Image (tube, rainbow, N blue to C red; front, side, top):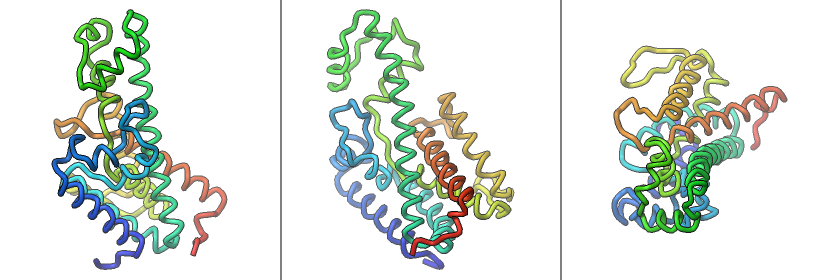
Length: 253
């Protein structure tokens, strides 16, 4: 790969190996053993494991998912690694991925706990609720007490999984905008060059809107918008701290 740095190359290889291994074991869904072990589950779900906030960022849900993430890592990550060195870049990348998992899980916890408290207040025992969810079932009476959107958020928060490097990628793109604010970027379906200092905040704001509204530009669901926002937020915080302390001028190797 042209001009690809060593750590970025290794990250791409690891992601591809995870992807091929997952594909060899079955479809891209929770019935796949790789998903059950390595995807990120809700902390109260019995399938949750402590390593999942790390491993989920090397899992992907399909060919286009991994292609766009690895293309973005190749496009933006190498420029940062060249300036920072491999150790500093890897620290930043992993930190943004963990930050993405943290915000995604925090938002899911809010959705889940809010509806759970409503159901408990209306006479449904917590253990009975969790048992039904663990069995992949629901009690239709729940929908009498929580709205359709809250019900969807409640069930998807508990049984859903999160996979992908997108959170770490969003952090990487934010860092790129910090380092190269006047670089011109464009999306494939919006081929108009826009400076990074405008493009990246706009991209994050769109994700934030889609996460809050529950809408999707492409008409499908299953996108962890708050993971994207979390990765971008942690990337911004780290870059702001480094810039404030002139830390961004130092390489770690």
